[in-house]
Each structure stands twice: as C-alpha cells, then as structure tokens.
Length: 79
Figure (spheres, rainbow, N blue to C red):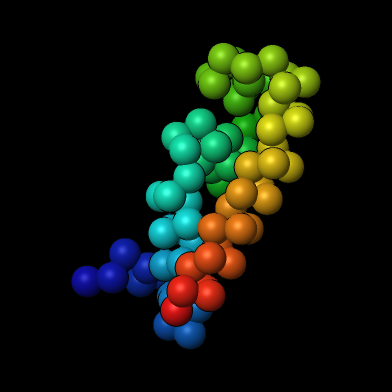
C-alpha cells in the first residue's frame, strides 16, 4: 500500500521525489524545512528546538530551501 494514498495518482511521483530529496539532506536542514513548512512553527520556536539564534535561522532557511531545490533537480536529472 502506498504511503501517498491521499495524493492524486498523477502527483505521487513528485511526492516521492520530494521525500527522497528530503531524506538526503542533513538532519538539521530537513528539520528546519519540515518544522517551518509542514508544521508551520514560528521561527522563534524552531530556533529554540534546533538551538540556533533566530537571526541564524533566518539566514539558514533560504539556504535550506535552495539545498532541497538542488536535490530535487539532481533526482530528476538522474532519472
């Protein structure tokens, strides 16, 4: 049984690529992205969880998103 049963079948391959890309990221990067974009925690709370300064987190967030974007591109180009 697929773990993406609630996702329209035409979109499942894309969700699998995102999952693979996230799994390949370092823990802190993955945690930052998931806590911000999936759980919708405020930066203050994420900073406390990851033991980073809030300003450091604001710098890391766009870098983390860029890392994810690059990993997704790698997976698509690998085929």
